[in-house]
Length: 335
Image 1 (cartoon, one colour):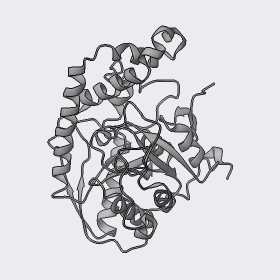
Image 2 (cartoon, helix red, strand yellow):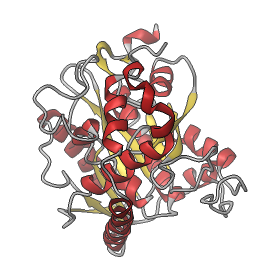
Image 3 (spheres, helix red, strand yellow):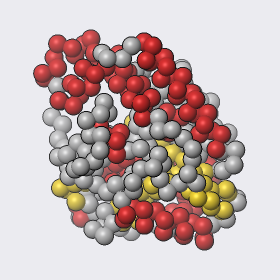
Image 4 (cartoon, helix red, strand yellow):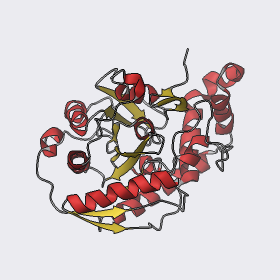
């Protein structure tokens, strides 16, 4: 019932996930916009692989329902062809909802209107990598070129950073896997042989976590979030690659030879720049910024302080104006 989501730029390659259908449809010009859910990067990952703008807002910016066992990680967000399309959807979708206890109050300004305001001087922190992750040379070159263009063309001061953060992967895995066990474990425990092998393994692993493990992960989540928030005392936005790799074979769970494929959350090993900001709840966007030698899209991630969704959108709109990407169409678009 659920086919493999293939990349519209090269169908033998993955489109990312998990909101791959939304990114494929937008990139292939099947629809102008689509919604996705992002618990560890699931709008930004396919946005990067498929060449679409994708934004995970501040946790609670777009209310969600029904309840999710990973509600402290899960965000809703748009995937669109342009920044302004996402800003319009944020105007429509944002605001309080009694069904979501995490929902934020209605914003004081229109996100779309903010995109049309002149960009004020910003302090930008550029992180070529996080946690000493090796970045593909083509990805690094495209991101470096994009950041250089931003520094030359916009009223920003760019400083290269290496944040002194510990990789929160273990924290993320505990919250993710234990949460899935809470949601599905009892109902599916006797049906594991009928499930996708990867999902069945996740349900099995969820039984290994104790209440103490879960509570400790919540404490670690708060500590890591405070570390990230402290960096925004000195910077208005952070830039980094959305992903350290290019799209890989569609039938593979992870890139061939990529270390840690057998972990509790295998895909988290190749998405080390996305899931940290699900832990912290910061707004984070994928901005198409270049192409590989084979013509595959490459993404730049823009991260803002919590509640600064409008600032992220305004900055992304300014970047889109100096480096538009919509003139590039995938072969499957028929255009």
